[in-house]
Each structure stands twice: as structure tokens, then as C-alpha cells.
Length: 368
Ligand code: SMG
Ligand code: MG
Image (cartoon, rainbow, N blue to C red; front, side, top):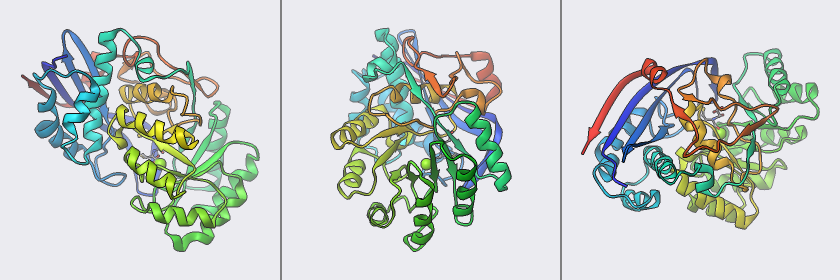
């Protein structure tokens, strides 16, 4: 397959809510969207890098620059035998996984379309529906948190994840657990704590959490192993797992019992599949994380989450929860916490040119 045109768009879509985590706040989803054209077909990849380097070191600007200078030249006008072949030539580029994942996912979509199979099937997925949960912003008050949990429980989400930060943790969780004694509940700290906070983190053991996501620094796998010895709640790693090698290290050190897989964070579906194998061999359950993706990224998430190892509900909630309008059709919507896995070729969703152009703030074209 020879890519003869790459279009890199900057897209801005208003979010229906303000999303607050321990590292920042946003009410606009701004992202890069890559279209790769080859042989009359188009493959799409969404870059999950954010405007600022607060979740990860990559940003919209760094990803745009690496794509233009180092990654798109590897596919433009080149014969690419498979998405894996791209991974091999792109291995020379260190880090910059979100940028790499953008090209890799677009290629996966393109190759699956060329073969006339769904991306889910091409990846080895067998689920026809995936279980989804929801990740809730840090609410300003206990009352607002309880109301928001109630709203999403009523919508059928199969797991509620609360973002936490120092000062908004134990009492908040106590109140939510009292109000909802039997829901599947988790927390995500986005690396906001240290081992000195062990008493606070251990106090969360009282609330029957399914797991606690990324309590400590993103580079501190050994610290998570130490914390795992000190608390009862299972630890799930997000930011710390950038690759299958990281997953192996974390599992060997017993730093986590669950892994959140994000395609962008690990550099594409190929690395996500490698993590899937490492986790399966160790009996570690996975779930698919989210980066407030619009339609293209959400469809890639649903495809990878259709693999059997993704046995816990993910953050891939309904598109309509985030956006009034989405750039793809059909929109990916869950009902009773179950989202159908598209069966059409590639991601199974089609980009709507009119809506996309309305949300596009910049467009760069690269030809051979
Ligand atoms: O896509 O619903 C979503 C957001 C899920 O909580 C979510 N993502 O650490 O898991 C995480 C965060 C990181 C992104 S916050 C913009
Ligand atoms: Mg997380």
C-alpha cells in the first residue's frame, strides 16, 4: 500500500462538560486528526496528545512537528507492507508514542478497509459488544459528585471512576460509597500522590474499590510495587505503562493487578496487542482508557477493546456524553453500559466532511 496524500487537521470541539483532573481542567477537545489516502481509500487516526504536557510529555505541537518531520515521510510515497512494517521503520524515532500511534492507527484503518474487514476482526477481537464505564470529573462539592454519579448510574454505565486529588479523596469516596453501596467504583489520581500519602491511600481500602488508578508518579513503577504491599485495593497503572516492556516490568515487580491500555499512550494498536499478550500470560485484566476522544479515536478504542483480554469496563463512554455533534457516523453510543462493536470495514465509522470542516481550525496537506 502506498500512501499518496496525508492530511493533518487541527480540530476543536466544545465538550458538553468541564473535565477536571488532578492535573488540569478543560472544556474544549482540541486534537490532531490524520487522514491517509491510498488507492482511493482513506484511513483515519486521531492523535490524543493534548494542548499542554500535563498528562503526557507530548503535546499537539510536538506531535504535529514529529509527524511532519519524522513520521509522515516514512509512509508518504513509500510502499508499506503492513502497519507492523511501519512500526519497524518508525522504531528509530524514540518516544513520541502519541504521534506514532496517530499514523499507526490510520494505517490499521486503511489496511482493514482495503481487506474489507472490520478493524476489530483484523486485530483479533471477538466481542460484539464491549462493557463501558465512565470517568467523572472532580466535582466542586460532595452533593454535585453524588448527583453526577447517580445520573451516570441511571444511564447504565457499568463502572464509575472518580477522579481524585489530595484533599478530595477519602471523605468524597465515603459519601459516594454510602449513597451507592453496590456500584463498581474506582478512583484515578493521575499521579497526584507520593508514598508519604500511604495513610490516605490505605483509608480508601474501606470503600471496596475495584482498583485505584495511577496513584503515584508516572515514572515510579517500583513505588507502586511498594504501595501495593501497603494497601489492599488493587493498583491499576495508566501513565506508567508506555509499552509491553513497561507492562512486563510492572507485572514482574507486582506493581499492578490491572492495566489501563490507551492506544495513543503506547504508540498504536501493535503495542497495545503486545501488552495484551503480556497481560494474558500473567492473568492481568485490561481495560481501554480514554482521552476524551472524538469519533475516530473512540472507534479505534472500541476495536481494541473487543479483544478478550479487555475484560473490565473501559472509559469509552457514549459519544453523546461528550459532544453535541461528532465527526463520524454512526456515532458510538452505549445502551445499558454496552457499546456495539462496529462491523463495517476498518473502524466501521465514516467521517462526515461537512461537520469536520466546521470544527477544523487548521489543515496541512502532504503529498508525495
Ligand atoms: O475519555 O472519558 C474519557 C476520559 C477518561 O479519565 C479519563 N482519562 O487518566 O485516564 C485518565 C484520563 C486522562 C485524560 S484527561 C483529559
Ligand atoms: Mg488514568
